[in-house]
Image (cartoon, rainbow, N blue to C red; front, top):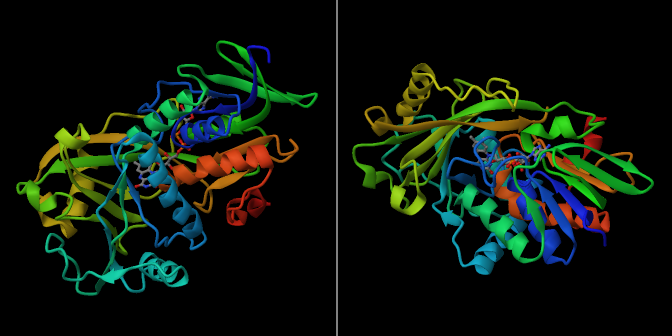
Length: 381
Ligand SMILES: Cc1cc2nc3c(=O)[nH]c(=O)nc-3n(C[C@H](O)[C@H](O)[C@H](O)COP(=O)(O)OP(=O)(O)OC[C@H]3O[C@@H](n4cnc5c(N)ncnc54)[C@H](O)[C@@H]3O)c2cc1C
C-alpha cells in the first residue's frame, strides 16, 4: 500500500474519534486519525476532569441498550490498560414527580429493569423543597475524559494506528470509489471515511440535512469548608431538575488534586443549550456575574456551596441537534463509505466506549447490532 493510502481515515481524534481509531486498529485495519489540536485538548468538548455516566436515561429509553454495552466496554478499557476510568459514586436525581426528568428516570428503569432507590433522606448535604422526590441510581458514577481520550489514542497507536495531532482537515471528497482527504499538511487516500469532528462537524460534513447549534457552556469548581463531607463515598453525583429554568443543574463529588489533578473541588454546571458560539472564536473570558449566578442557584439546593471558596471556572462546547439526540449514521450519497457521529448535545461522553465500536462496525460491515434507528439522519427528513 502506498504511504498515504489507508483503509479508513478518521477526522477528529477527540472523544468519539480516539475510541474509533482504537477499535479499527484493534481489528487489524490500516487507520489514520487526523486531529487539528493536541490530544487531548481544551478547545472542544472533552475536557473538565469528569463526565457523569448513568443508565436510567430520562432523555430516551432507547439509549439504555447502548449504555449496557458502554459499561462493558469501559471495563474492557480498564482491563486492557490497567487504569481506572470509571468511578462508581451513584447519582441522585432530585425533582418534582411531574418533572420529565424524574418521570423519564422511572420509565427507563422500569422498561430496562434498572436498579433505582428512594433517596429522600440519604444525603443531608442537600436542602430540597418538600414536593421534590429523590431517586438514587447506585451504579452511576463518573468517567475521566482526558484520561479516556489519551488511553484510547495510545492503545490505537500500539495496535498500529497512525495518529497525527496538530493537523487540520480542510476538505474531503469521494471520487472513482476512493476517498481523498486534504489537510493543511498533506493529501491522503482511503476506502472509508469516519467523521467525528465534534463542534466543527457542520463545517466538514457536506450535505447534512440538519443544522447543529454549538454552545458555550460554563463549568465551576468550588471548595466547601468541610471538604470531606463531599468526598466520593460521602457524596454522589447529582442532578436537580427544578421548574425555574429549562434543563437541569448537575454536579460531582469533591475530587482531590492528588488523585484527579487540577482543579481540585466540587464541580457543577447547568445542563442546557447556552449561548451559541463559533467553535473557532469562543469567548473564554468568564465574568464574575455568570459564576455568581450559577453558584447562587446551586447554593439554593446545596447550602455549603454558598460560602465555599471559589476554585476554578472553565468553558466547554456542546454541539446540539434540534431534538438533542445524537446523529450516528452513514452520510447519504456515499454508498456507506462515509460514516458520521456528531450532535452529542452535551450528553455523549458516557457512550464513547460503545460509539467507537459502532462506528467501526458501520464503516467496515455497513451495519451494527446496536439499535440505532432513533439516532439516524432519517428522523430529520
Ligand atoms: C461542560 C460539559 C459537560 C459535559 N458533561 C457530560 C457528562 O456529564 N456526561 C456525558 O456523557 N457527556 C457530557 N458532556 C458531553 C460530552 O463531553 C460530549 O458529548 C463529547 O465529548 C463529544 O465528543 P466529540 O467526539 O463529538 O467531540 P470532541 O471530543 O470535541 O472531539 C472532536 C474532535 O474533532 C477535532 N476536529 C474537528 N474538526 C477537525 C478537522 N477539520 N480536522 C482535524 N480535527 C478536527 C476537534 O479538534 C476535536 O478534538 C459534556 C460536555 C461539556 C462541554
